[in-house]
Picture: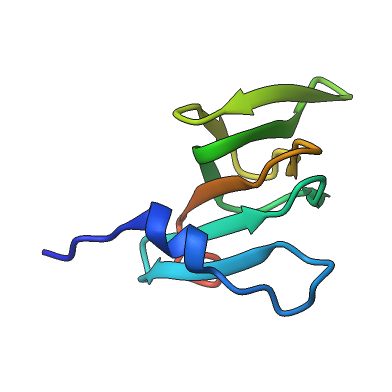
Length: 116
């Protein structure tokens, strides 16, 4: 058994560039990848698609999670404790509110590049 602390990992994540959200891989196996995100105030990850299922859990802060409804992009306000699930190939993205960080845990299954 492995115990993980996603909130601490998200708080300590380091961005590769100052204009990009900080990320860290928390766990990686053939079945699942866990990634934490720390988005600074107003930072965003542009809407994109994945061949895997993606579950976003809001650990701390608030912001907007983007998704789609039919052919329209929709934004959903999110706060700590919210969980949003995206199906494979469903558009998804995230943006922190303008006045606080947004810390997220992304659960991606199956792991990208793993057995599908």
